[in-house]
Length: 76
Image (spheres, one colour):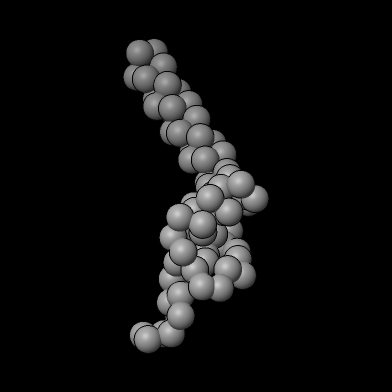
């Protein structure tokens, strides 16, 4: 009887851990948005992104030598 109870307990723990992983994966979606700030100043980019989307803004150049664009990353 003790072996069966232990088996049921382990199965229950496995099922609960799978559900917690699935719920966490649903809430972790991240989106990116290109904000038109020309030229891109890091402080302005961060503040604008935080004010509009409650996210993190960074000045990123798409190519070496090109002007950087403000890219905002936020929770969808």
